[in-house]
Amino acid sequence: MASYTATRKLYTLIVPVDSQRVLLGYKKRGFGEGKYNGFGGKVEPGETIAEGAIRELEEEACIKAKNLPYHGILFLESTADSKAPILEIHVFTATEWAGEPMETEEMRPVWFAPPSTTHDSSDSPAIPFQNMWEESREWLPLVLAFYFPTPRRGKIQFAHHVTFKGGLNPETGLEDIWHGIDRKFVKWLESGRKDDEGFPGDLEDWTEEVREQWIEKRMMAFEKNKM
Ligand SMILES: COc1nc(N)nc2c1ncn2[C@H]1C[C@H](O)[C@@H](COP(=O)(O)OP(=O)(O)OP(=O)(O)O)O1
Image (cartoon, rainbow, N blue to C red):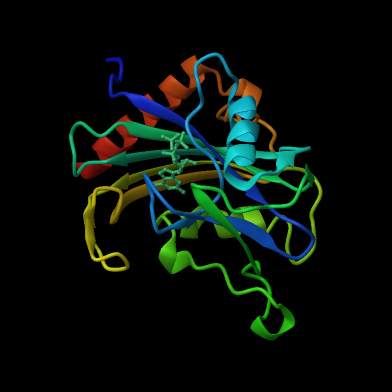
């Protein structure tokens, strides 16, 4: 089997939640400027994915996560640019932290009501999905359904592989290679246990090698479906 050689960029993303609300950040500069998202960034050389996630949350929202439930992985690619890397984004929530969320140079934290909340029962606005990365509409509600309206036991974990074809983003009025979902695949497990196909739900099981094999398998599946 030929090895898949596109570069991959390793990122983290944390979505803090309290008992009634979801904290998102308004990106003030750089990649994703003008969008709401969780908090995160690149994993630095020498740090683990979890260490990178905690550092980025503190840098961007001034809070230090005390727990870090792991939810899964996004593999995002764009056929609009042959040189675009695959974005590999590890997604967490945090339900406990030290400090109070504060605006930073990069992010403005804002509390939102989860999708399961009726408008009248919350002081917080609804999550602005129209002002977020497009594929967030797919995985974020599923992650939040684990906490709201009532927290569930166990784990939820997913692998979400999305290809964007690019195009004019109507929300921003700008050309965006990370817009226009072309193909998508979601592997979703509520228990977090390995399934029959050996889906590596836990973070520690997603070794570099497993991630490489997973994305290669996924790329081949998309290619096959195209024919
Ligand atoms: C393209 O689709 C995306 N969807 C979602 N949901 N999240 C995304 C997407 N692309 C990037 N992200 C996330 C991943 C990271 O959490 C941030 C990007 O982080 P950034 O480029 O700002 O990384 P930093 O290390 O903070 O960079 P600087 O230190 O250079 O500011 O967005």
